Amino acid sequence: MQTRADAAESKQKAAQVEAACRAATAPAEGGWFNLDPAEEKMRQRLYKNKKAAVESAFKAQDPSGEGLLTQEGFEAALGSLLIHLGKSATRHIWRIYKNEGMLAGGKLPLSAFMKRFILSAPKQSDEPQGPAQIETEGDLTSAVLRNKQKIVALCRQKDKARRGMVSGRAFFGVLAHLGIPLNELERNIVARKFSSTLGPGINYADFVRSFLSRSSYM
Image 1 (spheres, rainbow, N blue to C red):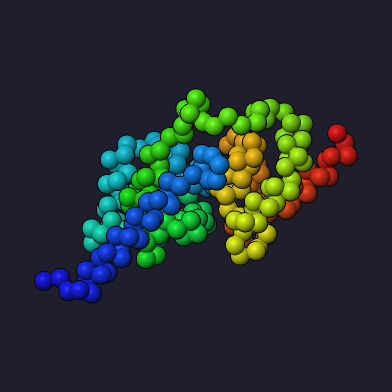
Image 2: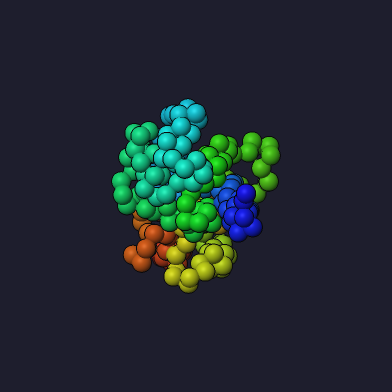
C-alpha cells in the first residue's frame, strides 16, 4: 500500500513535471519564442527524425520508466540519434532548461522536451500586428536606437542575477517584443559577437552600445 509520504512525493513530482511542460511551451514576452542558437541547431537535427524515433531514443535512456532523463541520459539519447553537439553545447542547453524551469528534480521530463519541439509558429494572420519588418541595416540601427532604453530595461528585468547578460531566447524575445525580429542567421551572428565572457548568455549593454557608435554615421 502506498504510504502517505509516497503519495506526497508522487504528487510533488507530478506538479514539477506539469510546471516543466508549461515552461517548455511558454512564449517569450510579447511574441513567439526564439530558441537559443545551440538549441535551434539541435531542433533542426531532431526534425530529421520521426517523432516516434525520438521518443524511443529518449525512453531507452529512462530504464525506470519515470519519464525523466538525467543530463547524461539526455546526451546519450541525442547520440543515438546521431546528434552530436559536443559536451559544451549539451551543457549549455541543459543550463537553459534549468534556468527556464524545465527540469523536475534536476531531471528533464520527456513530456516537456517533446512539447517544446512539436510546436510551430502561428500563422501570419494570427500574429499581432506590430511595427514594420526590418529589411536593411539602417532600419535595424534606427530601430535599436529608438528602443535602446526599452531593450536595456526589459533585459534587466530578466537578468535576475544582475550579471549584465540574459539567455539568447530571452534577449531575442525582447527584440521581437519591440518589433525588431531577427532571422536565424542574424541571431547566430549576434549570439557569437555579444556572448558574455562571464558565462552563457548575451551582453545586452554591449549590443546597444555597438549601435550607439554607429549613430554618428547615419
